[in-house]
Length: 597
Image 1 (cartoon, helix red, strand yellow):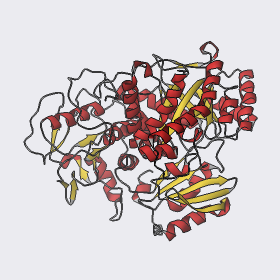
Image 2 (cartoon, helix red, strand yellow; image 1 turned 45 degrees about the horizontal axis):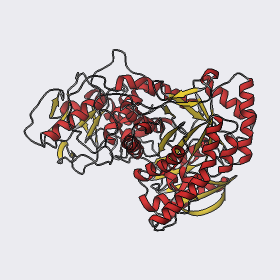
Image 3 (cartoon, helix red, strand yellow; image 1 turned 180 degrees about the vertical axis):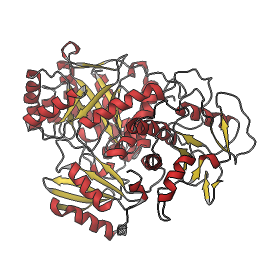
Image 4 (cartoon, one colour; image 1 turned 180 degrees about the horizontal axis):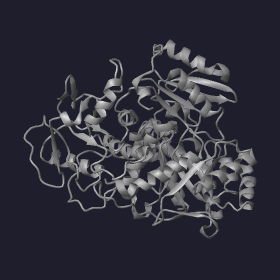
């Protein structure tokens, strides 16, 4: 199977067009030759018409092209009529998407008033109880008939009214039926979406797109690749557009890095027709990141011809490239089972070295100029005599880093070599230093994409000119890509009308108490829609269970229920203590914090 025309040369995936609203009256055309469309979501209660209108106008003003609004109940869905009417009265013609999870009746109502309906196959017709059950083929077929009976009325209404649809699978909310047959896997996510797509096609409804979202960028990338490959295998008329996003990415630098890894990698391979950057921040911030990220793709994606060669890794299942373990620097090894190491330039080392303390986790592990390294132009034939030689791509090569390092790994495999590879975020230097925002996105896309491919044993960041910032950025990329854990990891959803507490305030409060817990993963979820599943690999979860009431989880298991919000952070800390994961914070500021200033 293949997920793109070539992993070495950009060619945008050819899709059919999906019409969202009336293009002559402010509607949007997705796919085909049209530019990638930016979208975001409201954070307020859908029953608050005035605030919904205000937030929608603010989003459109900064370039949002599709506005998503949650509709958890029929009552919320009915109020979309008033929100849409007021927006149109004010001259705002941007299409609205109703976000539906558990209520088919809400979807049917919403389709009357908005241009698109998003459904989640794991929640739309199935209740999730984490039940273990073996399905015979006959029982599974019966379940599919039940789903078709529930889903067909919405398909018919969307077709009649000229609405669009998004079939949006989430890693955190696969149905028990899918989980029992396929497991919590990319294959399960793809099959869940295809089941609903087949129902659409059976009724000659084709005005829909897909999404495959996860809070883990590596899982997200695998899911989208597998989906696109499966669609191609189904036939040329299965060329539906794709919406990209890393769900529950979090806030600040971490949220931007996770999103850049997942979304940027796929865009560079020509996949993606709409995008959303899901941040635990005010929604307009998401559009600014969308703009910055889309602007980098022409620079990061390769347009030059590359001679055909077999890919050096399996793009559908993550496995770190096998290499021998070698000495990188004094008392530091890389390759083999070693963690991915952080290399810095001599100039960076000289600036940060005076601030390093013995216990600091964020510190240089080797100096680039001191390494014995073989610099290779992967566009040329080369020979290498042993596997224990560290290699990298030579500066000045006329390829973007993703293509250059994929080509290097492929040629090493063809030679039967397994040399450890040092990844670089850039191979040429801009005449004017990059802004911190652009440097972060470029490094995250370039380095993160390759790490998600399983390539890389050490990394070097040079596009960020600030010494301390470049060092911390390297560690943050490794954490976001799941390669290292040097600090607390947070899975935090963006706010929406389903959210049962103020996510930004609570996230800040939880971080203030727990951000020193190295290696602990905490999920902060505004509601239960994706909670237990998306938190499956988190150590602890803080989830809105009811207004002003919090449920606490260990993994995906609820442990404590209906805790008053005023007490919930303290109770979370108690839970972490009970499970032996708590340590008292040091009173001295860490280097990781000081390097950001």
